[in-house]
Amino acid sequence: QVQLVESGGGLVQPGGSLRLSCAASGSIFSINAMHWYRQAPGKQRELVAVITSGGTISYADSVKGRFTISRDNAKNTVYLQMNSLKPEDTAVYYCSARTIPTMHWGQGTQVTVSS
Image (tube, rainbow, N blue to C red):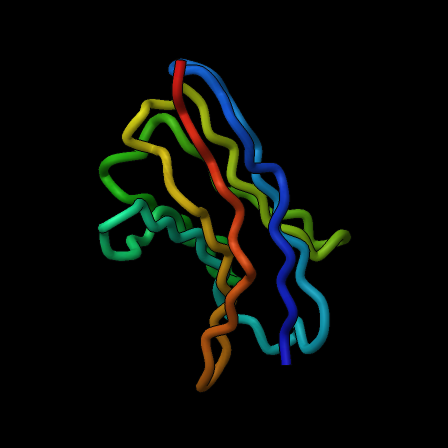
């Protein structure tokens, strides 16, 4: 089993920045990719960013150039640095860890972008 705990959400003005953290514990050796997803009210959950165990990174088009996913292997933590935030980035952000055959999820952290 893998346990994930997100932190770092909050209220920020448009144009501001936040950094989300996702701390993993448990069977972390079995993780082959870490993801950030988000879900806005009334919308489907969408993939925001991925980082694989080999270091391959990809982003949703809507966040390219503004968001950066990174990891600290010593701390078993993945980060999502979010810059130039827009009101449409408002959502609950979820961290997930992909193992075979299961996807593990954190509890989510709310990000609200509003003036």
